[in-house]
Image (cartoon, chains in turn purple, cyan):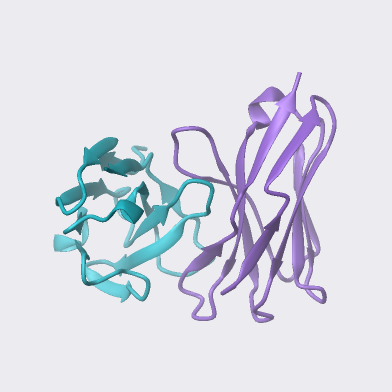
Length: 112
Length: 115
């Protein structure tokens, strides 16, 4: 929390390929890491989250991995489809734990 | 289940004018958030309410921005007077409780353009 860095800012992949988005955080006490997807003209929507007591979580084609030692976590999307095109945001709790800090976002484009 | 409602969806004003945004959260959600999202950036929290009390307004420019949540349900965010740098999408979100691990449900946002 407090500072969340996200890379890359834009990502273009061929349909069917995988996409990986990475985030780092600064507060070692952070214990909850959500990922939000924002489609054009809409608000962000939670797609997956992970808590610090596990290293990986999967939900169909999406997965999130967490490395607490290195203070980074990643979103993995496999077998990408056109509907995966959107802006993805990672987030982590602030030190007060009452709010989350969002990363700067990754614009993912899926090429047909 | 109805989602978070916001109005208006778009607003264009000139600098130094005033503007107000309205938000109706999901029924039963105690916590309401207002975020500012500048083009190409992530949402930045402006203010967080728990019922009708303010939990966090540390990043709210209080000389020009104000917000209220009367009766712990609907909320309004006001900007007076607006500056060019206030051009952004203003997102309202709600959650069951005000802890970081509660999912936040976002409305569609209000896109503000200040000329």
